[in-house]
Image (cartoon, rainbow, N blue to C red):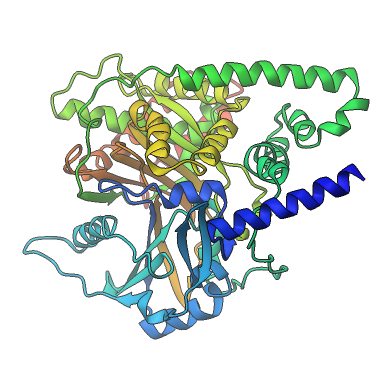
Length: 518
């Protein structure tokens, strides 16, 4: 009886609030709402990607492929609209595909290479806002580029995170398909009950969404998070599970303190108040087999090797400008996926962030790899990705000034945003053409002016930088130091003592380092 009365009262409250607030459409998640409102004059919240295709493709072929494969994702025909309670998705009554798939003829200055001209165009597009009156995405096809075509894609972060968008973009390749069929959600024309609101905002993101991700990674906290998602089941749990929950509580307290008390980065010219112009740069792919050989020889992951080379390249760039980097470190926020990969097509944002300290002042490449490995190992059992996800959820509930102040923590404590995404091992086809190279950058937030992207694809590793020109006028100078740092690390790895355990790996490294074609 009491429950029925409470249910009726809750329904009345929801109806009253709905009428008062004028809510409509499909409600946007709190995290996605936070991303929608995070645009600033210095940083637009767009994921920017580049595809290099050979031979070229036509605008007509691309348009048809997008119509067939991309538009079944409803988000790409919907607008994002803010309202009194946050934001919602609504179908665009004036949707026209030709507004979102356009062509551009690349202009080149005298003496400018074609790649430099494309990089300049991508930098310009990174600071051109998308039209909020229509769906927040746009593809620009440069039909004539490098003996083929170049495609620049811009998609607002409120639609999805990088992992989800990679899944979506893969639907455009030959052999890809439309998203799996699922039941259309009922439009949330009313507020959820208070307990549903609390669960969706604070408990479930820390429970059923992330527990499976942690479980796949071997995290011991996964069972405890499941207990938080369904606390009524904890009454009959074993002592061991209770101890797991207690340990998670200790880890949680430790990680909250670590986030709250993060010291400031070492001051460098890469940190400061960004302007309103960006430039991008990328290098030629490095063979992935060589990276794996170094990792095996040093008992490190591919990720450790690449991040150490990034730290070395940034340090060498600063030294080249006359800066003293000895003993200096910078912090990069690294996104961590918090969803099962089979659910990537569902879009939305389901990721956390961990702060990774990069030893840019460590001169020895081997020592730098081991330092990065140690720091990555420290983060593996951390709940900081979940805390960051929860922080974004709460931020989406606040008015924009309060959200900006809350998320300012990341900008003050961070020099860069860094992504490292494994892509397909073999090259893909798009409209019959080969996708030769691919690169993307996630947005920087607040006053962060540097974005670093590492993407493995087709047997190679692509390294790219997007930078605010006030803080880093020429990011190509950072890119140019990445390959020499990697070559130096490979050489030093070969010079290490050949212990019995390391012999096969170093033999592989030696074979891969031999002159090609010789």
